[in-house]
Length: 199
Image (tube, rainbow, N blue to C red):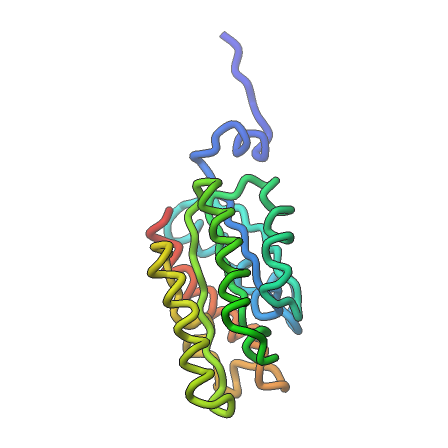
């Protein structure tokens, strides 16, 4: 009887149930603007899953600083080649900050959601909030955009990706917008709490 010793990467490939691939499509908050690549919150998740759940996850971070929802669909199509099991869609902040058309932003996000549903993927939508200076009406419409998508497509929802981080000086970089390494650790915990039950 022969015993085969497979490289770890090949073992994962032949045993898809052993590991899960999670693709993130987001902007600078998810790419990790201003911090080391390994310190961005998506890249902190494998260690959390391994330590707390003894689960192996493969992270594909398809996030680009400055991106809006307009590029989401084409970018996501490219990352489908990684055969992801879960999509974390974390876009929309730049649309809001630039005052772009919210119905158009919603349609762009929905295009990605429909693509992921066609691939039988689990979908997590990360919500965002606008600063007070954008006015109550625009802020409410922006917040409702995410809630409507969650309700319509029965998505898993992170109400506010920057929960516990936004507005906290010691958790953000000098610009007051992008989290520092401490902030990314908190974001990783926020996302882990949502992703954990999916695995």
